[in-house]
Image (cartoon, rainbow, N blue to C red; front, top):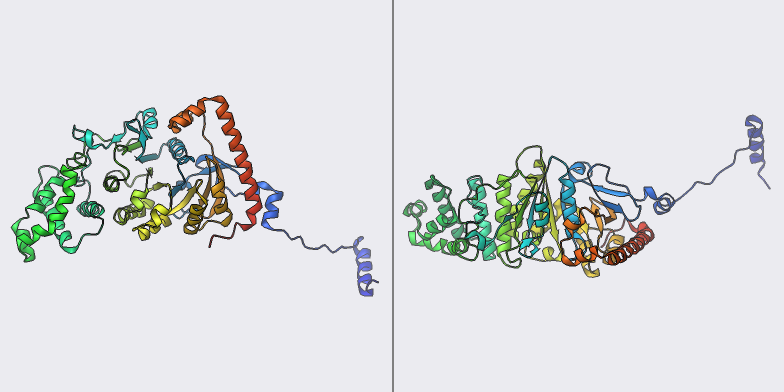
Amino acid sequence: MRDPLTALTDAFTSFLFGKVETTRLPVRTSTGQAQAVYLPTAAPGLGDSGVIIGREVYSGKGYIYDPFQLYGQQLPAPHWLVLGESGNGKSALEKTYVLRQLRFRDRQVVVLDAQGEDGVGEWNLIAEELGITPIRLDPTAALNHGIRLNPLDPSITTTGQLALLRTIIEVAMGHGLDERSGFALKVAHAYVNETIVERQPVLSDIVEQLRHPEPESAEAMNVAIDDVRAWGLDVALVLDRLVDGDLRGMFDGPTTVGIDLDAPLIVFDLSHIDRNSIAMPILMAIVGVWLEHTWIRPDRKKRIFLVEEAWHIINSPFVAQLFQRLLKFGRRLGLSFVAVVHHLSDVVDGAAAKEAAAILKMASTRTIYAQKADEARATGRVLGLPRWAVEIIPTLTPGIAVWDVNGNVQVVKHLVTETERPLVFTDRAMTESSNDFAADEALRAAELEAEERAAAFVEQHVGDSESTVA
């Protein structure tokens, strides 16, 4: 039976308004349900300004990314980390990204190309297409008047030169310089810079001064000349490797004249250097510091510095310290640093864990291709990825990756145009399969199936998007 007061209220309302008011229960829904009803709201984009990467697997929308457009609003830093097993599409992503960025007139790119085949680096085809000659650092070619980069180039400040010399020695020795060795190096460097004015000082000048220090240097510190010579002996032996050892010819002379630092794309071909030797981090340190002082300028250009095999930088505490400074300065000078690494465990479990964490923290964009389950979990813990993203990483197929842009996490399918395909797929196996129609159709069918599986997985787990890996 209705309450008399309620009946009276309904009668009065009907008389006054000509209708009876009804009481509706409030509508309650979850974010996941709302996204399922209207898919375009499921994946907020990054804006419509920048370069096209591909499409979001879940929503089907185009995925556009540009660190220079996003910096300051959606990105605290313009730097980017790319992770994943070989053969999953990292190289194709990097190359198409650079080609598309170069369509903007105010963009300039430097690539440290540490991989290659048939005697040339991976970026050789793109360089040829753009009419650019790669800067090939090769000890054998350098002996025959090849490319040289001088760590004592006058364009580098004296402070920068000394920091670079210390880094070269510390990387080669595997530990930091003690006070006495550091003093001997500092004295030798100061003497060379003060006395050699008619030409560029070179490394052999430093080695000579370390072996035969001036008496005035010892007297200034009230120590014996033999002590100063002994303190600098180990330092001289390390630098001698760049002068008369297996790395001779690349750094023991004046910088080669004619290197075009105004070209839209500058490729340093490091493919002739053993990637597993101590030479690679030394090489990257020298190139990085040289570029910092000669290439990065306070103009209106937006610069991209892409490093293949970047674990050589991040995994060495001494090289990482140099690049930390470069990345900090780069933000106000319009520099986006792109580090390409196979496994995050390569850099977070080594001697440079602290330095690696600092550089990773500066990378506000992270792109993760397929990894094994245990590696994916480790990556998720370090980067703070959502649980659903960690679970999907081992199931990803080539060309599909998890993108984390300062917390905006999406699954993205990278798209390559037919024009770009022969330039970015340089591996013979990829080239041959792309020329075979049947194989290409099978590959596309497999990719489509993988995209559907990924979309279903994301939809199923979208409610977990707020939880991160413990």
